[in-house]
Length: 72
Image 1 (cartoon, rainbow, N blue to C red):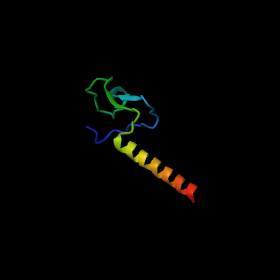
Image 2 (image 1 turned 45 degrees about the vertical axis):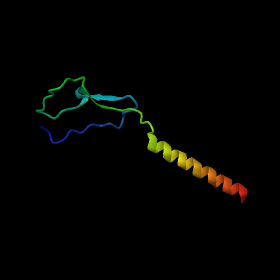
Image 3 (image 1 turned 180 degrees about the vertical axis):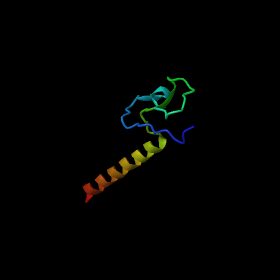
Image 4 (image 1 turned 180 degrees about the horizontal axis):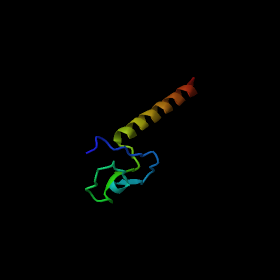
């Protein structure tokens, strides 16, 4: 059993997948799972409630700054 296996993910884009068959195994290592088994997939991240709250707070701060400049 190898200590680690390097997998280059730098060229992956949204929807890309890496299967067990895509992984180059070291000499003497035999694949026991199915070659089409997905081990990594890139999916588009969606903003959760915390990110939305931070975005709204930042927008409110920007609006307050603009209003302060108008009254100055």
